Image 1 (spheres, rainbow, N blue to C red):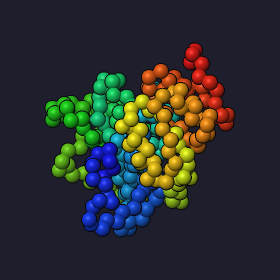
Image 2: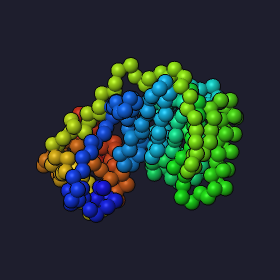
Image 3: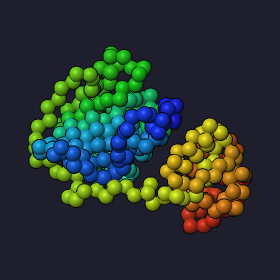
Length: 286
């Protein structure tokens, strides 16, 4: 229902719709304990861990690795704490001990090389983390639209072979419509002894002055609209030089900068802004 995807806004609908926006946290619904955690994706996405009747099922779609290097050691001797990046370690801890994990595996390792930052995983990433986290069953899902049934079947065989190669006992399959899997109760360890505190970053920033820098006017307008609806004060700049002038004049609380903007994007200027300082001028050598 966001303007990015659909031209009709919720306020234009004649029906009375009640919903609750979710962030990270724990929710009790119908006797089940549901824990939500943010995933790694260009848009905001949540993963869910459902704990009930002594079993746990974890659903993790629209997620990709935080780091190109996953393990400190060889995967066959690795466990969750030997994962290189804290984001990937946290992801593994979220699925720890689950009877079933349903995980994004849109790409093969070969395809992922040209699809980095698109927000999706490979079967190797899903298998490695699920096995290190002590997951009993892994269902690979979010299949790429270009993959036909034979391709998906080949991925399933490669994923099972990868698990066997590493000596992992996790049972792997590719999810499909109508698939029926049993999840047996097994004294599952709850994710946390106390409920996770809801993610407070969004509320903490509410009402902040945010500078959006992008050379695409449509993207600036879209981000401006979304942030303004959340109560923020938004300024826009179409170039790095314009942004530097606005930073001097307005001292915004937060800068949202296009990563690959021509001449002066976030990739080029990442060394020119120092946390805790106002800024340094962008040098031609950066």
